[in-house]
Length: 198
Length: 198
Image (cartoon, rainbow over the protein chains, first blue to last red):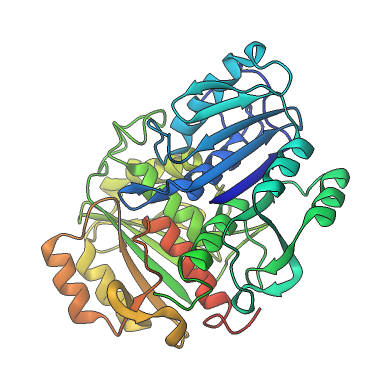
């Protein structure tokens, strides 16, 4: 399974935001929506063997489970609507227990650390880093966990934890990419078995 | 220069559409907006050496010029607003003459064929094709022109013209990708000089 953890730093923590202003009033929720789209969509198919965690303000996490998703569309607005629906049930998410808010979409009251710790137990944590090894020289892990940040850098604690937990440090290319583009490139690296299989 | 031509088949040809329903009432204009975002955005920068042509219903073309763009943002809605603004001036686009409708955004009354013919004169036309050569085995051209379709397949005439004009046939991976994801992968192929330079 491929996992993506995306930390959103300015995003809403309640459902009180407008789908008409995702890039402004909703604190750049558009960035996270694009990450979900990149994580799951193929042409005319969904990548079922993918799990994506959107960490909202280090407080809540929305988990998207590829094998269960039924109402995901590639546009930002409809994904934002799923996130808003999840946040409508925030009072139901008690402790670390998840609540399913749409088919394949789960909300929990968990921040970056417990999400990363759990995912790290299930797979190989890949840190995308400009000093990492060129992707073409690294054998793609079977169960990679990619950890990304939204339009902001990781918070200091997040960066430290990620450096501690990372099993691999990989560089995808010479340019710094948006998180959703990095997800697309990471998928292509995995799809091609490290640029070997087409 | 890197050029992308994206053919949109169901998109609006007038400015009479709502930014609140890009994936529905606006005929999947969301797809083209994501292509623009993938074509131009780096983290905290715009790719200046990129030109992107959105062909609308084989009738109008909106050209985005990386070196001149001033008001482009990565979200779908704001890009759609630039396209709508371009279409507001459709009566000003006479013959093949372009009209600049925002900084770096131009509208012309041209369909797929003249746009492809002009771009082919300036660069190497790359057809993304499942029977193409694996990208890793192809030397990236200096001035590639990638030609893509929205959520629909190319129309018959478009496909024939593209096959005729294509200088290279390239396969980006084993999976069929959305057009915006293909643009991201193509950029990574070029950025890394064919997965050689990181």
